[in-house]
Length: 608
Ligand code: AGP
Image 1 (tube, rainbow, N blue to C red):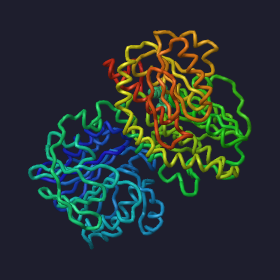
Image 2: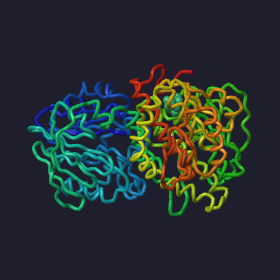
Image 3: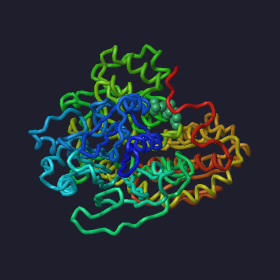
Image 4: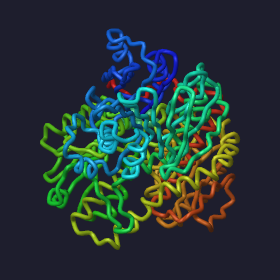
């Protein structure tokens, strides 16, 4: 997600802004920019696509001794990575940097008819809106910011400066963190404290709904309703690595634990729980085109492939006349597969740069098939080459093992399937339960993550000694078992493989002995009894069975059971997958291995 820095004080603002942005690079970004003001308010705005080094090249020719400024690293959410879309955004005499998503930016933009927009971003709309209340300095900057924020729906962490008031900065947050560093004759601002280290150990953490007016020796905080807030100065955690991981020991755990929030970003503005409908603008398919679809080809590698497999089980349930084919990109690109008329290809990729997936996309496009991207990295190659797409908006996924992206990829594809079913007139009685559970899923994930980590950690320590594992599941639990096995394999190097539970007796059952443990994902409902009898087959051969289930009545004498409560039925495998993710994490920690950068692997496989 984006990074924000701000400086006001006696030192050189440009120096702090650049060093602060470098501290925030770990958050992932695709462009950067800074603006500083001299004492008369004259602005020096520098922005560049790509890495901060590109910004520094511009800075070398535009050195200033300014003492106030703001800066930003952009992880694109609306609009491609480019200099024009990079922050700070200017509107008249004001400059804004923004982290978050303005959900109603289109409606707001439509009202700002006298503003000449240059970018595709929601953030520029916010700048224009603030200036529409500021009226070039007719009103105090803080008042203009407050008036604008009262109209905004969505999330923001912002910093604002004005050429007409170079002695103050206004910052505000709702949903995107901001921390104020209290120094001596200087005040600093950043998205997280890592940018403040080395400058001050004293920090004020802004809360949602608060706005602060900052001077070099002053911080005045109020709520959006002008109620004064007393600033609480806290000691900053000094461990840089710890701060960048949000206090977690590893990015992998951080990204597992942030899934309630990341899934909310995926759903934002796309789900109408009351109506029981979903709406995806990105794929760019009309109702008539959606109605015509009779075949889906879902393409991906690794976790993205597993996400497609899991999504396919759901899509075929509620779109009876649509066939769904899920393929491994590195295989499919060399096959001479015929793609029938009225097909759409879903191209799934977190990074948007996976070579095999990209090659598949290009082969499929040669057949004239409509392509829809299910991608996280905005403006990535795949995102640019598909005909349309749905970004999953989970923010940067730093750990090599993909976790939050998987959950959001599955749901994004299910939502795409729902738009097809809606267009085909499938009854809301059929679709409603899916939409209802999707809307409830972030909170259900939160509830699981509040309870299971400790229990999973205990079990993981017990099974960390095994070199071999079998993951098992039926129906939607089968692709989920495949994903769980991949997670364990790729971070802990345990030889973990998944089988459809009904396949066990067709061969893999021969493996069951003391070298192996068996991880069974056991959703209540679909094929539950069949799976229970499969477990008995494993127990009868001395299997070391771990069961993850949401079925209250499960009582077989297995070695370990992790029980999930709650109301989620349809998407219970996604909750079970949280256990698999945590299990892989804690086994790896128990083995003392490199959690975030496992041997031999890369985060994005851009070679064949
Ligand atoms: C998953 O944990 C792995 N890192 C890997 O399988 C990954 O899912 C695969 O390389 C696809 O990457 P993509 O989603 O960026 O295309």
